[in-house]
Every structure is written in structure tokens, then in C-alpha cells.
Image 1 (cartoon, rainbow, N blue to C red):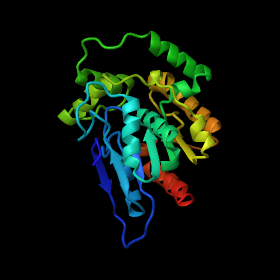
Image 2: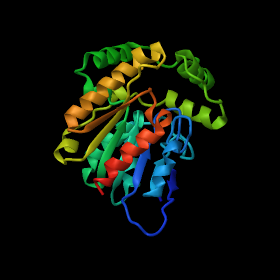
Image 3: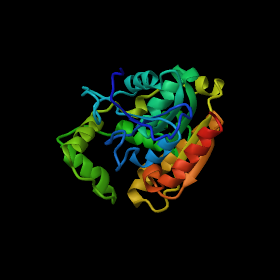
Length: 262
């Protein structure tokens, strides 16, 4: 029994054994969310068990006063059990990196989808600019979760998902989440353990201009930096939300990555 909720998908036929895959989501979402989560990765359950973790304060996991990547990393280690492939997106990729650094022996492979690991790529000018901007900014204010959701989607030229109670709870947790730019991410344990690493990012050409400039370009720089630092492989796909906009391509990349490391 884990401290967080885990959605389990297993659509295998027969008794074929393969290590499971653990997925860790980004902000404003939860494990099996079709908008921003991993619902479109369900076809991968035909080959192995998929374990979709809801971080604390999201989905069906318990409330938390403040979501924290260090706590999430501990939860990820628990969900890994005796070993699994690990996939993280955005802020969830930060937790996945921290979990891998703590217990590389439990991670068969690490796949990072547009990781928000900005501090691990602070030497890149576009990332340094982002860090300076967010660290000097003012957080909080009298903003409701629905207003925050609207500003984070429609305000950047994207469609706003329906503001259901489940969505607004996830947004409220995201608003209080410990900033990922406070994360100190040790890459040496991951590199020294020779954990296989796959990094997936969008090309961002068709993203709304403000979103591309302020978020997309730094995320691409982080993806490139981590690929270099960890000796990984980089997959670039059209769009700016790969696993929901290009699920077939992402699923194929993950399947091939796992199948050569089982």
C-alpha cells in the first residue's frame, strides 16, 4: 500500500513478463487525465503494467498543504517497488530525476518528457534568463484556481479545459507547489549508474508565441542539456505537448526504448 494513489493498467494477453512502467505527471493534472496526463499512453499497457501515480494533492491522492518535489521523489521510489521503467513529465520529471538519483538500482530506464529541470541546465542562457525572471517575480495574490487555469491556457492562446472540481483541485495544488527552481538535482548518481535515458521534447514551432518564448525555448534547452549531461537519446516531435499531441509517436519511442532494455 503506497501513500499515494496509483492507477494500474494491464491489458496483456497471456503471461508474458516485463518490468512495469511508472508515470509521474506534471502540474494541473493527474495520472490518467486525457488533457495533460497519460491517458493516451494506455496502448502501452498491452505490453506491460503501467502504474500512473497521482502526486499528492492531485487526482485521487490525499491533500497536501504544499506539493513538494522531494516528497514526490520519495513516493516515486515507493511506487517503483522492486524495479521499473520510469517516465516523468514536466515537474513530474523533476521528481523522477530525484528518485533515480536516490535509487538508481530500481530504475530500469528513465524517460523524461519536457522536463522542468531548469536548475540542471542553468548554464544555458535561455534557462538562466527564465530562472532570473521567475526568482524575481511575485508569487501568489488574490487569484482563484479557475482564474489561474484560464490565464495558464487561454491567456497563452490555448484551449482551457473544463474547470471541473477535480481540475480545479489540481490547479489549486499547482498554485501552492514548491517551485522547481528550488530543486537541487544531482545528475552524477544517474550518470554513474549508467541508467538509460530518453528525453522527449516538442519542436514548438506551432505553439502560441508567448508560450513558446517564455516556456518552450527554456524547455528545449533543458532537454538538450540533460541529453548531453546524462548521455541520453533525444527525440524531437512536432508540437509542444508531445504525449497528448503526438501520442502514437511518443508511445512508439517509449516502446522501442523499453523493449531494448527489458
